[in-house]
Length: 217
Ligand code: E4P
Image (cartoon, rainbow, N blue to C red; front, side, top):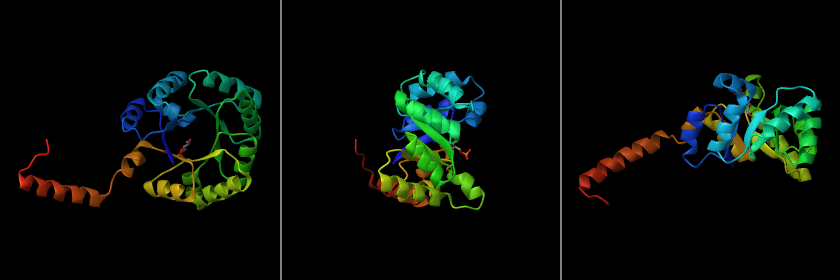
């Protein structure tokens, strides 16, 4: 499973990318607002930091305007993925980008049938929002499961990008039910490394090793 970071914090992205475990980055208008810097500059920096797919979201709501914005965003770097909302206009723009060979991430997906339409429109990625569904009393993971079944039934190649991830359990479950990608906030990425028994076990090993008086080098 690919792991993307859901962030516009270039310092944090650079640090976490140095682990070699970050496959891409997603951004959205809220995260761009948080960065407090011009979007094109932030996206260009992220594209330099991480060679994988970098999602940059359009702000327009009509197909023609989304296409114009997406073409500009796609011109920033070859690894830009144009992020488009899952609306009727968004899917028209998505199909246009597919014809032009521009990669897309169809976002704000909350139902299996929306995901079906995104695949038919030729989306490269579809982003079901797990956490926001959980917030409303649904099980976000059911959505990933349903999309997986539908895509496998018909052989759609659109990749399922589990988004709105809030915790390690979301990452585990998304991997189990067959998401192709998970995009996670930096704090959750840090949590993936942790287990109290790892810390406890390492403490003991280091103590015992020190007791031997040996050194490997
Ligand atoms: C990523 O593509 C999404 O924009 C993001 O995961 C949304 O997360 P949120 O629901 O925590 O804002």
